[in-house]
Image (tube, rainbow, N blue to C red; front, side):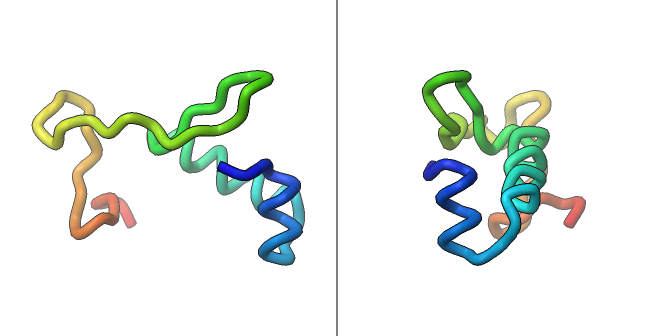
Length: 63
C-alpha cells in the first residue's frame, strides 16, 4: 500500500484519519504492517479456516 502520508494527501484527509483506517484494517486481519518495509495486503484465509471473518459479498458480517 502507499504510505499513510501519501494516502492522506491523495484523498485530502488528515494523516490521523488514514492512520485510524489502517489500524482498523490491521485489527480485521486485512493488512499487515512490517516495520521499515510498509503495509501489505494480508494473505486471505480460506473461509472455512478457524477465525476467518464471515464475509457477505466482500463485507464483514459486523458492518
